[in-house]
Length: 140
Length: 484
Image (cartoon, rainbow over all chains, first blue to last red; front, side, top):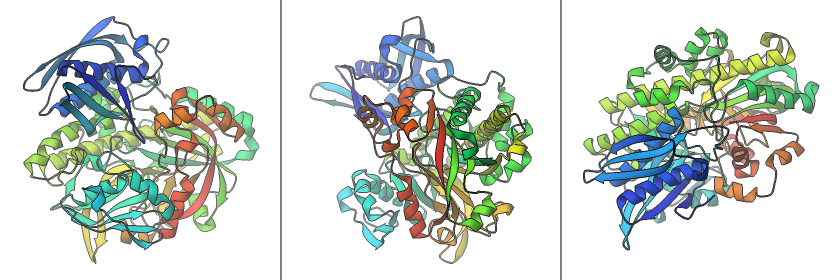
């Protein structure tokens, strides 16, 4: 279940993800893909439609939480699952993204993990040793 | 809070004090057995008890029940009361699943008359009638925006007015199944959107409907008042406010992250963000939280109606003849405005219970008239393979814990660890060998929820019983479990 592009952060009651990238858009993109992979497995998702998402916050960790929270909302309300993501980030920490994917199909998609919420606990977006990394924990 | 500066002082075998230090405004108090302490120390939960003690306007100790484990902001099992004037209200003190809770239904049926085959069929029938898992909902139930407003305002009262159960259920629900200060206007469009298709659904994770049997009676007089007898068939329902409550929590964490700065509150952890109880932001949160709580009350009321319908179809007789009545319905994740006596003074407080149960003593006016002579029923579900308990509130809880006690078992294995340890095993088969039939919407959930992933709930109940903050009435054993 663990793919090379993200790490699973193990937690007593819940579970989280950690990703690394050369720039901020890349870590936000990888975080979204990890979010979907842990939930249903990316291999099972196809690119059939797309959604536009934008969020804005005061700090990068808050952008990360709110970005994934928006994806959770799209899943709960429309059953939308992402397969490919393109992110742009403006200096005032406004994130805009296009997510390609499809809606949930119980015949082809098996939910492995359902998130209740994306939490601020230990949520971080940081730069170290020439790489950006992001971490977030989900309430299950 | 720096963890290494915190110390634990033994009060007796069941109470451990974290003496006030650094920015703490009061002591911490953990209800636990000596055996539990190592796990508590490792879990950072102590640090969280101390963090809560730093919040403005805290009255009495920052407390934790024996099922304490690490949570977002407040620990799970956390109880803390705040002054209405100088105190705060915090979504992190309530949790994401607002008014997650349990209700217990009793019956005239004796479990042994049914046998394993019938339990299996009954669980399968419940599974067909009660929506669980992703995107599942009843085809015969749709909720309009106007009706949703009524749900948010009236809770279980709305459900009863729509024919889900009857009026006599209402007096057997905490707060009569309706938080009066709920304000649907404070619930965002997003939260409404997430909730609209999820009313009357069980959800996933640790939520369940469980058929059980009363295995042991500890307090015959109280059991009699509660209508419990040995060998009786019972039904537990555990669920909450679904996506609507999660979104309300999330919305207000964002709002309160800003107001925390505005009111100059120093936070050791972002998840503890809060606002003064009497500030516009604090009142907004309480209004939204109340509305989400009402959504959860209505949700449990609808699901228990479908439990009754399922039994009626299955046994071919009315639920009245089967004696399927509600014993009680308790909330696990709530902030409430309650009156308590502290240091000889009666005052209104904002009591946060996160993964903790209200446990009022005999005589309290909030205890339903039918139970007032003995005290409020407290329902403690365990893991799906062992047992659950019915307790009753005590005067000692009123004096020490703002009338609060534990809420369940608490996890010991992470989901990832549970999956690892279940590799190559069949959890369903193992449960069947123990005489428990389990059916789940997701196989992954069943594995994550296996008994060994949880603490033994008996150890938790032992602590609250010895500490005197509630008293055991009966022990129940699961026979058939439907998991989300």
